[in-house]
Image 1 (cartoon, rainbow, N blue to C red):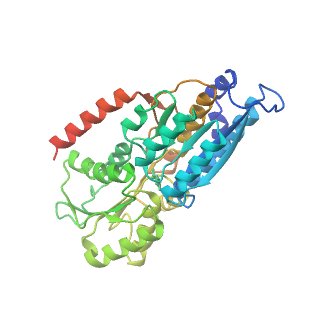
Image 2: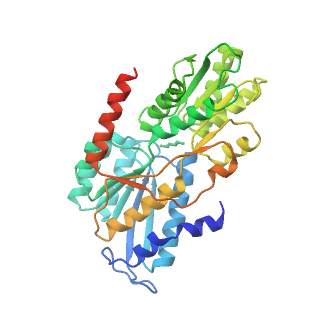
Image 3: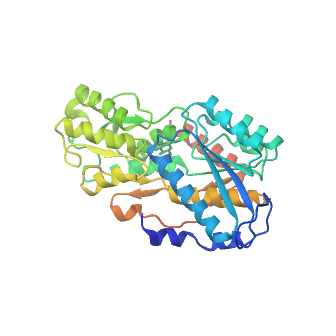
Length: 365
Ligand code: BGC
């Protein structure tokens, strides 16, 4: 990652935060207002490509905030090991320890309600990240709880648009339709459901005919699994298979390995599109071995989550949603990380928007 871009991100918002008043702990640290804040961070599992990028950027950014503001942010980052019981225990510990804020990437977003209720009784604000909860969960303690993330329908739409913009429009064998498979992330994650639906909806919207060769293959966001299920599909469907929609780059990278092993060539006789813009995928993209991806902007998501957490620790109220945009990526420059403002939304606005979305989904079925 380019250093200059990282510095760019230490922009006005951080300086503004530095000038704010203080709540929180009391240990003196050299210069500035010198407060120490305890930040509990619960990650659904460490062994996840995208969440590793996110976690590392979060640490880097909080360290920078500590250096620049004179306040000190002490991070306690826990690995939920993809087990909600383990993670709930970790969060209960955060509450017992009296952390100043909790950032949570929940294993199971349906646990959000009980976690928020617990945190509320202990008056510890909560920032949910990466796995979107139901709107109702954010209504429990408005102002002190929030979701910082990206709208997964946007990433799915971009995936479909990338395929629609290729010369063949995904119909490589010219039989009048796109024969595709989908590599599915994780049923507990809205991102997987929405990317699966909206990638192919974008083909429909572009007037492109399509046929799913199989039900989505569950591959748990995982490279090895992505490779395994794509190999199976290639064996079963042979040259019929024209497009692989992968809910994330981890699985897309696995798909490309399987495609090469089967003697086929991405770009020439098959297309593959992922989401995240992780380094492994960008390497393939630059070699022409991946059709495209979508930047899942861990940089601005982690910075926004930290900025919002700081506001909460200083006693301010925050919006219910902070949305960071996805970016369509078909060349290296598209994935450049640069500071961007998140869009806020209230629970009321989100509810109305989701109602509209449900109506239009119903009409198009
Ligand atoms: C990312 C996946 C990641 C998942 C974790 C998604 O937004 O695209 O790569 O595995 O989040 O929850």
